[in-house]
Amino acid sequence: MVGVSVGEQQFIKGGIAQDLRTDGRKRLTYRDIYVETGVIPQANGSARVRIGGTDVIASVKAEIGRPSSLQPDKGKVAVFIDCSPTAEPTFGGRGGEELSSELALALQVCLLGGKSGAGAGINLSSLLIKEGRVCWDLYIDGLVISSDGNLLDALGAAIKAALTNTAIPKVQVSAEVADDEQPEIDISDEEYQQFDTSSVPVIVTLTKVGNHYIVDATAEEESQMSSAVSISVNRAGHICGLTKRGGCGLDPSVILDMISVAKHVSETLMNNLDSKISAAEACEDDES
Image (cartoon, rainbow, N blue to C red; front, side, top):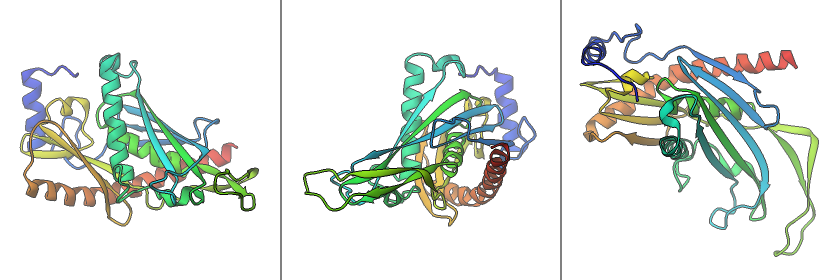
């Protein structure tokens, strides 16, 4: 938790009210974003993203699995987050565990549309190998290295970059076998296909401070928030998920306005992030 004096609180809130934040940004402006891909060679895909003083890493591991009986025509995705105690003293012990679980659940909602899979930003059908029998299981791990606010947006950006960097081996399935037997599969060591990220959203968190809301809040600004709404928006402008934190309730009309603002902000963020990811991928190809 960031310690802020009464004078600093008034300075932060006053600046936001005048659309001039303490670091010189306007209310709806993000800090500079840095992207590096391929940071974990053992993973199928990985990326590191820095937004201001917030630094996170995401990795993707693909393993052969069996589809769920409830969704036999889809693969599976699991999200795990680890908040390193070195990033913030309060991350040590139970505080870090609770935040990790909260972030993982929020990412599950924003990327996969919750448990139902409705509005999923990740196409689970693309992970199917053979209906009801074989699929890819994607394990997405996020690590918070340094925290200066806006963790969810940074983790969402890192996951999008890691998925863009993800290469999944091509698979050949053996001829038909009995229903109770698992078919034999041949996983290629040479042929890979890139994961389709065309529908993967960006996450825009709008943090309400006083009577206004801001994007990409710093830790100091978050210490003054009454509530925050995180909205995931894909390139087509579709809402993939929405999650809220903070004890203060919000009028439905305010939430609708926040969704409209998030859609507008997401266009700039998506273009900026895609450009940074493409540059990072090109840099990685040159180095290899």
